Structure formats: C-alpha cells, structure tokens
Amino acid sequence: MQGHCAGKQCGSGEAEADLRDTAALAAAFGNVRMQRLALHNLATAFSAQSRPDDTLAVAREGWDLVGSACGREITALFRSSFIEAHYVRGEWGPVWEQAAAAVGEVLAVGEPNLIVSVAVAALEPLAMLGQWPRA
Image 1 (cartoon, rainbow, N blue to C red):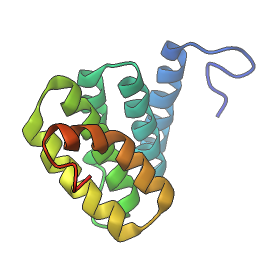
Image 2: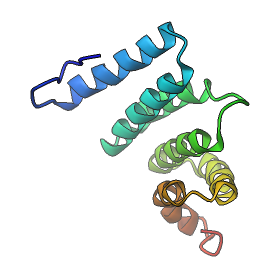
Image 3: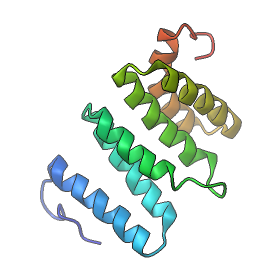
Image 4: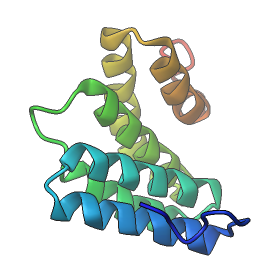
C-alpha cells in the first residue's frame, strides 16, 4: 500500500492517517496481527507527542484484539503504551498494574529488545512508586 507520504516528507498528521488506514485495511482483510502492529505504532506515535488520551484510546483498541493466541511480545508492547499514558495522567494504580505485569512478561520471554522497550516505559514510574529494586 502506498501511503500519503510515499516519495515526500511526511508530517505527523499524514503518518497518523497512514497508520489508521493500515489498521482499517488489515481489519478488512482479517489480518489481526498487522492491525495490532499498526495500532501499536499509532499509540507509540501519540505517546511520543505527549498525547496520553489518544495513546490510551488506541492502545485499548489494540488491546481488545490481543487474544489468547497472541504472543507475550505484543501484550508487553501494549502494556508499555498503557504505562506511559497512565504515568503522564498521574494514574498510579493502572501504572503499577501494567508495569508489574509487563516486567513479569518480558522476563519470561527473555527477548532483549522487548526488555528494553518495557524498561524505557516502566523504570521511572516504578522508581516513583518506591519499587526501584523491582525495576
């Protein structure tokens, strides 16, 4: 699929539209894996722009697609989005719930890149919650 940004410099609005289009096309073709990846990337873009409400909305949309057949990797990535958004909003209960679960999941998987991804999202919030040893 050639997106809005093919062959030119792209702003965040066009990139967001491309990710939404990708998620919609993936859904239309029943490609849940691609749909989840597009939604995760959109949530990550919103998080990088300090848009926690948008991050949560998109992460929840992707989370709803995470089923039992889904690997721990995508689950942990969505948890990272939840951690970041709830942290920015000062919602400590959900931060703790998601961070504790994410840390357990990435340690079980043992994939270094996934561990780093969760660490980037969870270290500071866990330290703020007095859980530095767990972090």
